[in-house]
Image (cartoon, rainbow, N blue to C red):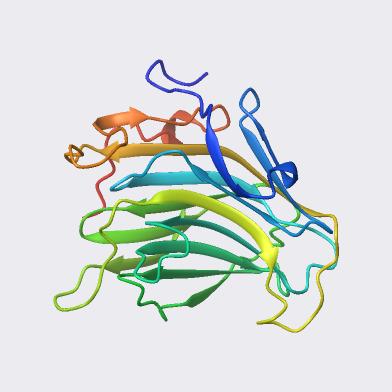
Length: 229
């Protein structure tokens, strides 16, 4: 059981193809399907200024050449001056994951990480820890990348939505997309860091759990504001 402060994720916003995106609040699962309708994308209903964002993810199986799946934070999808922090799964090779981040629309900070497993074989835990001075990307409890704020360099600081999407990226990678690929995303979790949010229309406060957790051990539940500085 989750602690008493935890609340279910009852509401998401679906940006496109709602019929290809199913959300079950009771089991805490969101499934995105790529087929003849194209892909789908959902986001949280509110923005966050920092926190720990964790998901159990199983990527599509089969021939996924040209398919791209993302779990990411973005100040606003489609905005050319966006701040963003990414986990990006590239269908051509399910044994790797790509991380990246943007500040004021400037990215080009991609890094490839070898997972040591096929991301479609089962659910694995992927975590973004976003603080005022550092970002960490974690896979199954292991830190695979850490970026610290540097003087004179851009760093994500705008309030951001949590997004996930599956889409046809064959225009940037060789291979065609096979219809019917599915992605499962479950057990999403967020803990705020207590920053003032009077300027923004979203919840904040120290150690507020916005997403229901039932598959994480107590050691993985962030009952205190994360400290990565």
